Each structure stands twice: as C-alpha cells, then as structure tokens.
Image 1 (tube, helix red, strand yellow):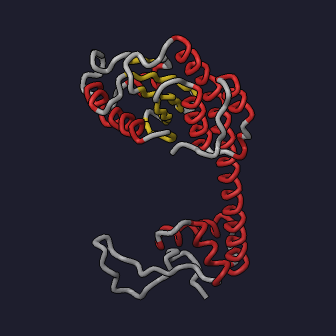
Image 2 (cartoon, one colour):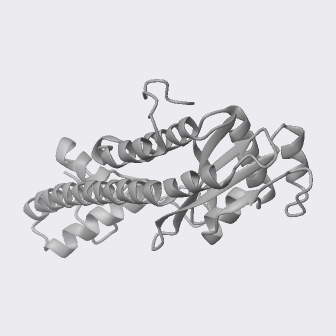
Length: 268
C-alpha cells in the first residue's frame, strides 16, 4: 500500500518537514498515516517494512502499511492480544526487538515473526487523543537482526511526535466535522418533526404535547424512526395505521383502530 506518488525525501529532516506541511483538512487519517509510513521507510537504511497501528478504545487495526509482511505481523499480534506494537500503543513506550530468534517476551508471537523473516522490529508510540482513548504505534520491521542502530532509532523516534500531532489534529478535525454533521442532522430532524406536529395541531385541534405523543405512538407501532414518520406525514398527510394485537401477537377481533390509541383522533 505504499504511496508511489510521493517523491523521495533527501533526508530525515526533509521528511519531517514534508510531514509538517501536509494539509490536514484534505487528508483522511488513513492517508496521513500512509504518508508517515512511506516517509519513514524512505529515510531509514536497510530493507524495512512499516505499518501504523491505530488503537481506539483498545480495539486495534492496521490503517497504513508498506508491505504485506507488516500487515501479517500486526494481525498476528492482534489475534494474540499482545506484542511489541500493542505494547507501544498501550504504554507509550518505545518497544524494540533486537532479534526475534532470541527474544523472550511474547513467546507465542516472536517465533512466528522469525519464521516470516522478520528478525528485528521497532515500535514507536503515537499518543493521538488520550481523552477519547485513541493511540497508536508506528511499527518498523527489519529482515536483519539488530536492524536499528542509534542513528536510525533516533530518526524513527523523531517521527513519533510529529506523526502523533498530525494524526491528533486530523482526528480532532474529523470529530468536529462529525459532530457538526450530527447537529445539522438533528436540527433537520427537529424541523420536520415540528412541521408534522403543526399539521396534527391544525388538523385535530390538539396541544403541541398531544401532537408529539401522536407521532411517538405512531413511531412505536410502526417500528420506525420518529423523523421518518414525520416525513411521511408531511408527504402523504397520514400517520401509519397498525392493526392492534393482543399480547400473544394475534390480531384482535375488534375493528382495526389507529395506532395512536383510543384517545387519539382518527385519520381522515
């Protein structure tokens, strides 16, 4: 899933500069983190695959990767519920395996990693939104033991705060948009419900509270959302009529009534 359209940065500083210049309003969380994964692999030496784990309320997923090996190793850890990438995401600690063939932690994971050819790894924590329980890890998988020297480790660790801040800003922006869209939908729903109440008030000469109760009862009896019932009333001039049933589910012998109850006006 590497982004082939991003030109190669000349240095780690150049890569971090590009990361800081990204337009967060134009990027999804996935595309931003994909860019992070691509940039970090281009400036680190050796044959390295990268992935980004996103942990939302302790539910992990891989949202960006540069190769299938990284995805497979991430998912292996998710299946087991532990591993270096999950440890980094949960604890905020940089987590390194220098040699999967001799690593004693996570004994049901590291042999699998070694079998797949991953001999060392480095996971950098990403603190994205502590209040909402959103964190992550930038995971680097090397095909060599001791694949990360002091310099490459420093470069990788430097990406963490930049990536976390950028991801946090995207998350905040998307959350704000989602909230705004939700409020807009709620306001639209409220408007059509108020219009439907107005129709019932005018037609049956009832109070606003009674009109709302008629809509609510119709919604329950028809097993539909209140807003949808209100929209139908505005379009057709009618509320849904449901045949009353006894507690055992059989239709009553009496004549079908409005679902609004005996005290409610009948449909015209």
